[in-house]
Length: 524
Image (cartoon, rainbow, N blue to C red):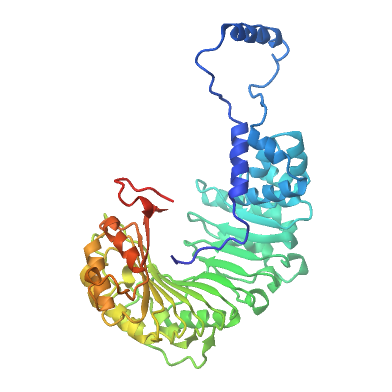
């Protein structure tokens, strides 16, 4: 079941390193269950051993390692190269994993200290001396730099701490594989403290190994524009940008394949749209794009389609697009921008917004200017998945949007709806005439939806009464239900006999439908 953009892992499954991590934790367990009734002769022997060895161990620490469990013994029989590779995978999950491994036994310590890739993750915090030692252990290996500054600081202390952290890793900028900086809380000139050493016109600050860049500071009020790494990072493929104004140099960003971009908000309307169009033209090789404009309280008079742009920006490789809105309405910059974009191979479109707080706003209205956005949408000839959530949920908008999609011979669209607005009347109004386009339906946190309503919608889309025609197959071939409290999925089990693939999730876990009659759900 497809869901909004998530970072795809480029590594092997983490089951092996997680098992090893569990084994290491079991090895370090300080308590062991003892049998309640010991033989008397064994108890007396234990007492004699304890008395004999008490003087020998009087200066020992409180922690005494014991023999590793059987699982650890089996792992130690693996070749050192394979074991080192598994350790590296474990380090991707936990940045303290190398330290744990190096304390297990002499053999594992030797492998850990002679595997530079195990120490490449550097999470800068208060323990700068320790992270400096880890950089030395990484030797010539590329580094993953993560800055996590403390929040409970004064503005000056916050600034000085960030500057000190970056001072530790700036000499190794040519070895950076990734850089992640996320600021929580406000302090002035934080970007200057973090990135001043990365700006300038010198080959010493170029980042030839950089593959991923994450810069997030939502509360930034510094309008300064930053040109990073002397405009040279040819291997950069992924970027997450929010709350910073960057010089979008082609030599830096033209090879991006993934971009999560939130506009800085220092410009609005047509000017903001022009800036985003330029950066998309530079990064025309994008495959995944998430785009957001911060809400600045624009009035309705600013909603108009602009004819001032003469260029069309083609994104010939873009397969996934997410338009995120974090305010009460569609930002005008979005309506200015969309008519000048071309998505010839776009497969998945996500129209998402902030999930409202139920205690603040019991009813969730849709965006007032959705019809204006509908006129601005470009053609989507290859669209096969549509995800509509929260403020985007309007039955008239959805019905009109579906009519704009191409109608091939067989149903091709997977439609995902998320939010409490999805009810039986909503579906009947929004999906009228769309049966020949929709192949699968997915519902996420649609608490007001019921199983009876779902069956009636399937009957309407198929044009038949499914309960009385078991030999016919509905046009909907798959039904996904995720955390919908009002849907009794057990009463929908019969749909599987008619060729409908049914999948259900409760509390984030997939339900094992083989136990549909059980009172308590079992998970896969």
